[in-house]
Image (cartoon, rainbow, N blue to C red; front, top):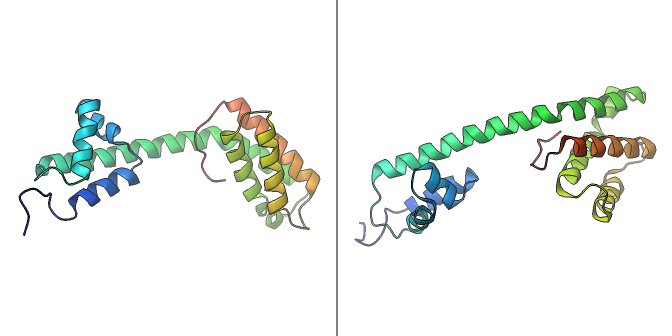
Amino acid sequence: MLRDDAAPAGLPDFLRRIRVRAGLTQTQVATALGVGARSGRKLISRLAHGRIKSPALRFVLDFRLCRDEFALKRLEELRQRRAAFEPILAAAGALLQSSGLSLTNIGSYRAFIALFLRAARETQAPSPERARRIERIIKNLSRPYHDPALIRRLADLVLSSSDATGRDESLPSA
C-alpha cells in the first residue's frame, strides 16, 4: 500500500538509475523535458528522492524518452569521435606493419595505443605528468617480446597525431 507522502515503490531509484546510465545531470534532464534549468533540477531531484507523491505517468514516460533520445545522440557523438580517430589508428597500424611484425604480434600493441590515446586526452601536451604516465604505461604493459623502440615510436605517433586533432573528449577503445 502506498503512503500518501511517498512515490510509488522503486520509482525514485528507477528514475535515478536511468538518468545516471544515460550520463545525464538533473539539469540536462530538466532541459530535455522542457522545464527551466534551475526549477527543473529541483523538480528532478525531488522526483529522484521520492518527494513527489505521485508523478504523472506522462512525466515518467517523457523522462524515459528523454533518456533514450539522449542515448541516441551520445551514440552518434561516439561514432563521430571514432571516425575522427580512425586516421590515428590507421597510422599506428601502418607503423606496426612496417616494422615487420606478424598480425598476431600487432594485436599485442593495441592496449598501448588505447592507453596512449587516453593519456593524450587526459594530460596537457608536453608536460611532466604526461611523460610520467607514458613511462608508467610502457613499464606496466611491456613484455620481453615487445620492442621498446617501437613502443616509443608508437607513443610519439599517437600522442602527436592526437594533439593535432585537438580533441579532448573520451575516446573509443582501440
